[in-house]
Image (tube, rainbow, N blue to C red; front, side, top):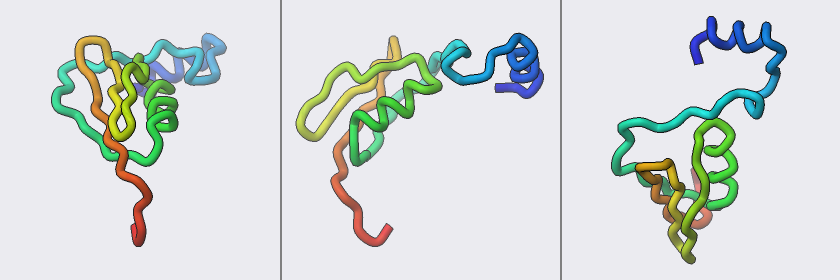
Length: 81
């Protein structure tokens, strides 16, 4: 968010990201992430994007972005990273 927009929002008394309209993704294509927890990633992404966890399987999930999606693959625990 540009600083001038943020300052305008602050002057209007909006103090949290929950009070600000969420961003929409445009032009994203073929996004896939290896993650440890589907729900945690969905919660993180939904804090700033207009999205939701729409399909969840044992080792894969999809985050709905409207006309696109993000594929999540369960990576399990990592050692040494």
